[in-house]
Image (tube, rainbow, N blue to C red; front, side, top):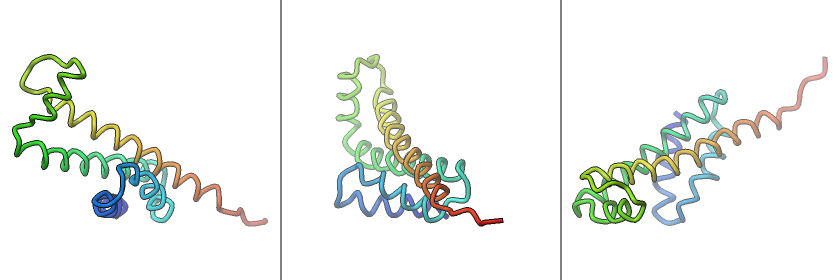
Length: 119
């Protein structure tokens, strides 16, 4: 459930807001719904990774991967036919790490807010 919440909300908000909106959204979603730390991190990581890679493929494939190939050349990647795949995976990894760690922070913040009961 948390995975789908992160994917849908991040997709909708990134239509209008900057890329870094994924961080407070992942934080808030994990604060609200995460069951444990690994659930929080993996939902944020894989949700944004799939979202960003899918979006990059949606924009890159129709134009023959022109921009992704040029970015690969700027990064000094070897002149093979797969630089664009590496560029798309790197961009997905950057967003996924940001969302994963913010989701983890949201879960831990909720845990820190819990007031222990007196025995």
